[in-house]
Structure formats: structure tokens, C-alpha cells
Image (cartoon, rainbow, N blue to C red; front, side):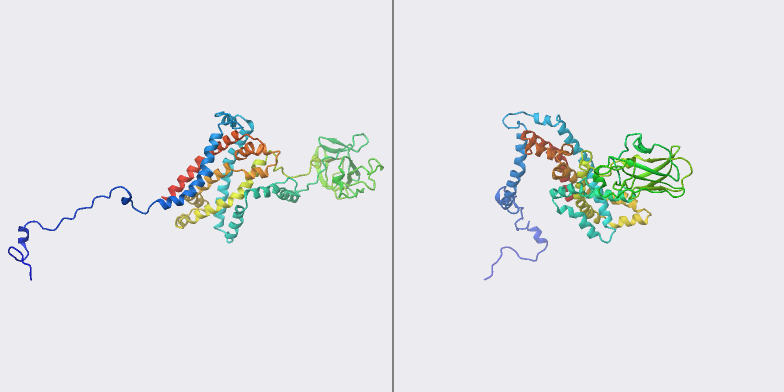
Length: 466
């Protein structure tokens, strides 16, 4: 059975338009979803909140709460029972020892980050030009594997003043020995009587009477400590040859008594390595040095009278090492240890930025005739400026927080001269001071100093990730 349509049937054409608009329903857009659970796009945030909750709790307990409590505690006295307001903050800028601490931190911020960044840049550039770059990077970066406490112990030994224990002074002593003798007799002096053939004059020892070629001169000294003569040889007399002026320098003292005054006896010790000058009319004509038996000789002297002089340098104290741990050099010495630890970190970051520099720019500059220094200064450094800024700011934060190195390296007698804010905060609060109000104020002050640099780093990281 076939359905029949009412009305005339015909082919489609112009008649369709005459019959009116199409009977098909129009497609209308769906209304926007109503706000609520049904309209949320993506997965539910509940799993993310559950995963973030433990970290947020730890962050609040370990960071947020201590900061808030430190700010609150800094407004009270040492015992915590009396509200003192900003009195603790005023004490920071009125106490002389705390001002020394702030000055030391200023030195750290100005010197240490710049040196670490520059040395890291030099190492990073050098590692691109040497074959054993991997081994070099490993050696330079190795201190990062050592804790700052262990690094402090290492450099405490390195900076020992005695050359037989401190590595730094042992190296300096070895270099000095290459270029000259380090023999000195600071306690030696002539006898103070008219019978002595020599006398003291302006720190030197000079013969009382003129002498000339063909004479043997005796220069007796006293006052030398027995420890300085433990390895000294026995003094001997000497006979001058034709045209020679000779003599002996020795300690005119016999252990146990006896002996002849101003004469070389059989058991008396020689003074080796003593400089002797032949002086005429105020000018030095010749110079020689005593041997192991204390004897010396001048040859080729012009005829005439001379005065023999032992210059002041013979009586200066022997080099006993640079006082790295003294009050003057303690801060530069600790900064040196800090650079040793962090130079590898800076080198690795800068080397990573250096590898990302397009080589086409460097090669184009070289083709145009630029020298390596010009390429480094005008192309490499400007392209590395973002990385250098990150390293520099990070080092500033680390210098403001430095504690371990100062605490371990600086001896107790010079810690006031080497003190920094972080160490002062610990010392005032827990290291015997017992004033947690002032310690909390120092902690807040240190946080205020660190925050701007942390904000700079965070903004930099966000800008790089966009």
C-alpha cells in the first residue's frame, strides 16, 4: 500500500520556492551550561588538593610558622615575658659588635658573589678549549660534594700559620726558599763592652775598627737561643789568602761555662747563612754569605780600609707563615674557602648557558676580524647575561646565609672580627647569649635582606618559562 500525498505532484524546481519556506526545523545553539558541578571543565581538583596537602602542611610547619613566630618573638625581651616593641631592632644598629657583623656581611655581598661569578665564567670558557674538559669540570665541581662543615675543617688546616702544618704557608715558604735564604737570627747581638770587636748600629752589626785584605776578622755574637743552634756546625777559624779578607761569625758562648772571650773555642757554634758586607766610605763594595762553619771570604777587594757590616736583614725573624687566621685576614681567608666551594656550581651553570649560544654569531664575528677578546666581551658575555645574573643573585643569597664556614674556620679569639649575621643570630640565641628576642630580630632582619634577591630570582625564572 503506497501513501498518497495531497496536492499536485511535479518535478522539483521553481515551484518549490512558490510553495514557501522549507519545512525543516532550524538548528538553534545550545544554551551555555549553568554554573555548578555539571559545567566544570576538566577533572575534579580534589585529587590535586589531596596530593598538595602534605606539602602544604610541611611548608606551613617548617617555613610559614617559624617566620610568623620569629616576627612575634622579636617583639619581646630575652625571657619572652615582656613586650619591648622595636627595641630589639634598635639594638641591632646600636651595638658595635652587631655593626661589625653587618659590615662583614656587606664585604661578603660585594666581594664573594662577583668573584664566584667571574671565576665560574673563566672556568666555563676554558673548558671549551681544553681536551680534558670533563676531568677539569669534575675536579672543580668536586667541592660541591663536600658539606660546608667539612670544607671548613679542611680550610682550617690549610690556613694553619705554621708552615709544617698549614698547606698555604708551606707553599709560600717553598717559593721564598727558591728565591732566597730564610735564615735569620732575631735574638743575636754583640756584647756591649769596649773589648768586643763589633758593635750594634741602626739594627746592624759593624766592626769597631777598619780592616783590609789579608786580615782575619772575628765577629762574635751572643743571645742566640739554643733551639736555633740545634743543627748548627762547630765554628772554625779561617786564614785569608793573598788579597783576601776573611773571617768567622759565630756564637761566642760555651755551654757549661769556660772558653775564651772573643775567641773561637772548640765547642762553640757557627752562624751559617749570615750576610756580610764590605763597606767603604758608606758604600757597599762587596757582599758574601757565611758557610756552614761560619766562615766567609772576600776576594778582589780594592786595597784600603773597609768596615765589615752584618745588615739588619740578618736579625729579622724568620718567616713563620702568613697569619691567615688573624684578625686582619680572617674574612678574606673565609671568602677564599667559599669561592673554592661554589666556583664549580657557577661553572656548571655558565657552561650550560654557554653551550646554548648560537655558534653562527661567534663564527661570524671571527670572520669579520674580531679578536677572541672582542668576541668574548661583546658577544659571549652579553648573550650569557641572563645566566650570569642568576648565578650572581644566587651567590648573594648564599653569602647572606653563610654560617658553617665562619663558625668552623675562624678561631674563637677572632670570631668577633669574622662574625656574620647568621652566626650572630645563632650565637645570641643558642650559643651562650640566651637572648631569643634579639636573635629573632636578627633572623627577621636577615630575612628582609634575602627576600629582594629571592623575588628577583623567582621573577627571572617565571620570565624564562613564559
